[in-house]
Image (cartoon, rainbow, N blue to C red):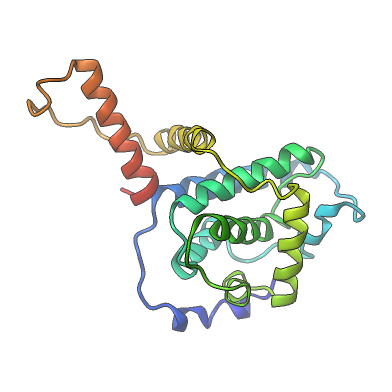
Length: 214
């Protein structure tokens, strides 16, 4: 991965947005998985389909830093990161022998986000731009995209129920990382029972944390 390609991106996008919770929690999950698999030292066959994602050396940029860079420069909607997580899980279920580690997780991230943004967003940057964001060549970006799509069997559709279930997973992980403060007492919802009011507040807090950050 050529990190020299990442430096010029600051000139392409000047506005910096607050990082939403979904980006933070997804990077934490994948970073933890990569570290665990690095420690386990699971071998990867060079003949395996996923070998295209495997780099020769560990990138200098962390998983968190890499995903935040994608968020700042790629202009994806926050929902894309949930869908990218779903695609990665579909890949993992199809190929349980393949482990996400520090040598491949960055390429899996940029490729899954690229697939997700094309499915979710009406307007998005082309592969050449994503390649620059990810620090790889356009040829490699194109190859990884096709490789990934075939690997998940072009199973790109995400139903509202599946999307909601994965949001719940990310929400629980986010609460474990930084539990939200208790909501202030209010009489505005006097027509609701205590349980209903609490449920509504929890859902509102989840949406705020996952998609807009703290």
